[in-house]
Structures are given as structure tokens and as C-alpha cells.
Image (cartoon, rainbow, N blue to C red; front, side, top):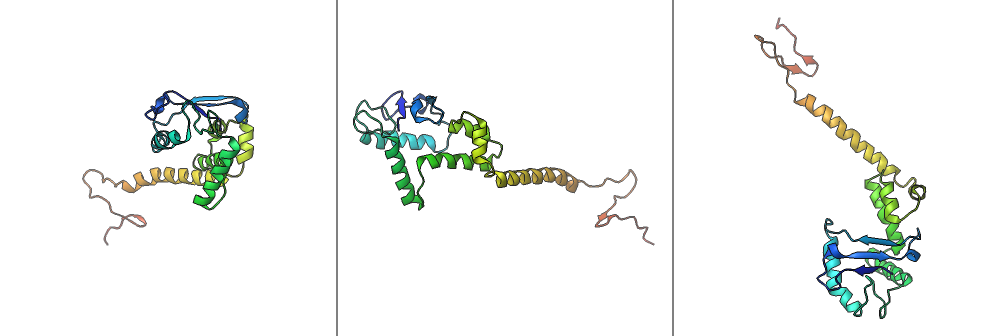
Length: 192
């Protein structure tokens, strides 16, 4: 994959100094992607990238090769080779063949499952030019998630209403004994 890195090329490179460059001929939108890798807030991302850059990449890349997935010499690993390696590894680890392209869509699906109205985020992540493309691809997939999301919202709203009422105690007017509430309401018996 033609994903080049810029910034310090040593193993101690700072995550905040790492940029990814993906040429337009490798994107579905035919626009080049140049972005700083923002992994500082990710829980495991910085550790995995640092381990890869410090341990694996030096064994794979020749001096002067700035590609994240280096090929022979100063070239990058071709997308077909990388996708095949991803699919073979997924088959071994997960028991199912999943390509790099399918992983992209899996991430979109998982994101929409937790964020049913997050189509714009997925559109930007996948590089779709139009939101209609994203919506058309994921239409129906997020329906169950949307229903579950709405159900959680209604339940949380109900709890905010029910809890305060359950915690209330009836105050008696001055000079009167407090009323006891039973299952059918205040006890208004006179004792006779």
C-alpha cells in the first residue's frame, strides 16, 4: 500500500510527528489523503504503532524507504499483496477470510452500530464523495442499532422521571402527623 510516512524516520518517532500520505490513485474518491496520524488519544493505537515502527518495520524496510508497508527496495508493498496478507492472517486468526477493504466496511458498520446517526463520520472515514453513497451502502444495517439506541434513550429518560418520584416523601401539614402511603395511596382511615 502506498501509505508513506513523513517525520523522523527513526524508531523513536513521535506519534504527533507522523503523517500519512495516500496518493489519489489509491482512494475511491480519487483525492490524495494527507493527514497527521492522531493516535495520542487512542487507548492502544500509539503502543501498536510504536511497536510496529520500532520492531517490525526496521526489519522490513531498507534505509530511505518511508512507506508504512514497505516493499522491495524503496518501493511500497502493492495493495494486492497487502490485501492478500491481511485476508490470509484474518483466516488464520479469525477463521474467516476478510480483506483490507472489508475491514474498512466492518469498521463503518461497527461505528454505526454504536452511533446510528454517524453516517457523516463514516462517509469521511471511507472517503465517499457523497453522503448518499454511505447511506445507500449501510441502509438497513443500522436499523436494529437505531432501535436499541432509541430504547436506551427512552429507558434513561423514564428513569430520570421515575427515580425522583420514588424518592419523594409526603410532607404533612404543620401540626399533623405524616401520612403513610400504602399500595392504594394515602391512608385516610379514621381508625373507627
